[in-house]
Length: 176
Image (cartoon, rainbow, N blue to C red; front, side, top):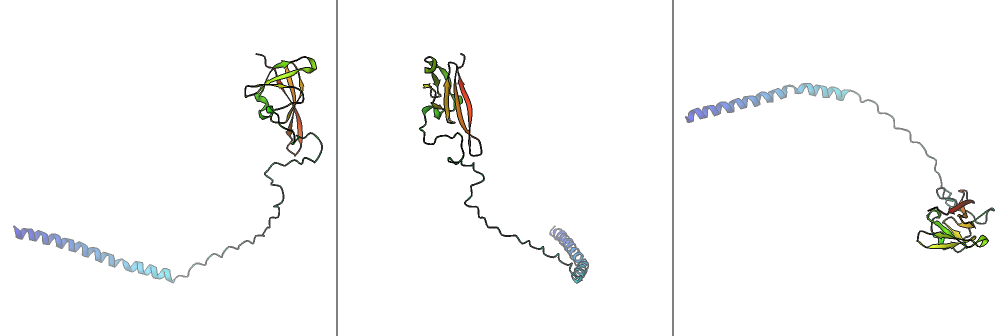
């Protein structure tokens, strides 16, 4: 039995050796085509290169507008320029100028005739007395008249060009 095992092993190893030998000879035979193509390609002249692009010369610019107004900020009004209404920067602000005008409600009036005083309830739940000449709202709103059913106001709003516009407003007594 040992002779039969050895014989089959010899046959297996012999067959494997034949396959390796056949592959090795197959690889060496096709090499001449490749060598011919490489030699032919090296012998051809190289194609011409594209010329380099021409660099543009840019004109240098010196920024000299450091002292001018920033174009992205709103214009600052000159308080001495022009005529027309302007807010008084030195005036002491009143309590009701801290609240937006649309957040206040008219609660009623006290008095008769020219001595009529308006009652305004602010968002802080306090009722304040208002008479002509008082200020309220966040746009320098000055009370011009108090009636039994409304309080008339003139506000100063910026016009976008450095000036100010007067805009009428009112707080009316609501029917409950």
